[in-house]
Length: 529
Image 1: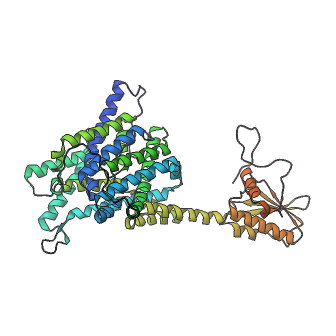
Image 2: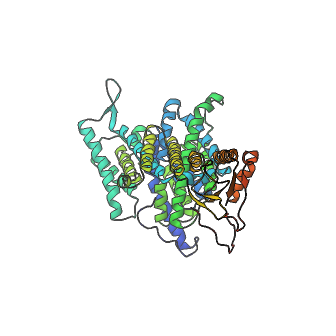
Image 3: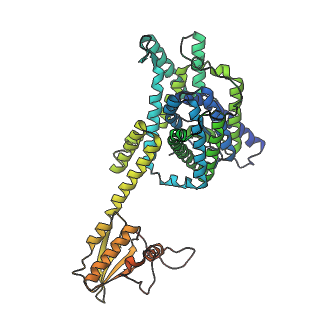
């Protein structure tokens, strides 16, 4: 994943010099301005009060900026979490959402303590492409509800008609045009904010009758208040919120750790995955007790920060504090924002999120990767993001295992002592165990047979069973099997197997063993496959 354009080079001056502080503060202000419309829009996606999204953006943004694993990252309310929250809010209400966010944070802290953040490296790139594309489609579909209105007779939702639909489309299109075109002229004002300001100005100036944020909910610009979620403390409540909390925790950490990797790549400094898990978890616990919808890292806002020169925790902290100032003193302005402007901003988020190069590479990449991309995209749309990623990783792992199982082969030679040597190629594991057995000919081989593992390795229990079965076949013919060039980890695996391989003769030639050396040793090492 690479963003367009180059990030500014880090300043050689101290991060606390006047010049650097100015850059960090202005970067934070830019991010805060861009956070306002998105936090409100994501709150609408989740069917909660806009202030719930703004509080989450402030609290999660502040705590992760101060204690997160990668300075320069920006966190807040996100669409990936919002789309999962909808059914919980609609079915059980917002109080259950707050309880879920607290449990989500507890789970994320547990993942951080267990240092599970490192497993993000197990997510293949095709899974990430499908994940991103599915997320974009989900956000797009969520916006279509703004193009509907209740039927005056039946009360069912119906599409806008005639002038109302034309006006809605026109304002959405104008917002998208501004967001697309402004960066080509200037970057002084964040494009999403500019689009909202322009459309809001047009609506207010011309007196157009359109739905606004204030029509859906009045925004009270107060400080977030401590609030214990009003839900029954019972096993039934836990059964309701735990599945949502687990899904939200997984999605939040996946997005956060992907953002961490991307920011680390752009800044040339590594981030701490486990530390980020802990910070995200703590932020969500606090958010749940202060009336926020929870959040995670935001790739778009993080890119805005990095490109604006934000490199330290100062920028993220300033962004959160500026956002609080907006909540306290600018609520009357937020209430006048037309919903069409928010839809336009979200459509541009969709355009920027979707990996359009997917269509160009589908016919160039392996078929299994193309299937994984399509599968993860589909599961994301029809189920949820966490399930999609798990399904994608499982399918990718099975595809790898299938391909690896076909790589097991051997080159055979007979040495001067009349011993037949099978030089294996490829890993020996559950997928290749059957092919391994088919390579050998116990009936026709000489009395001494050597299996050379210099370009192979013993991986799992199925491999041990395969070796034991092969040794038994040779023993039944009165012949001896020798295993050579086993790496230390393979030897440990065989040693732990105990009596399973006692019929095998384990030995190595006098010229040494091909092993994984540690440290600087001036010994030529055979090249592994």
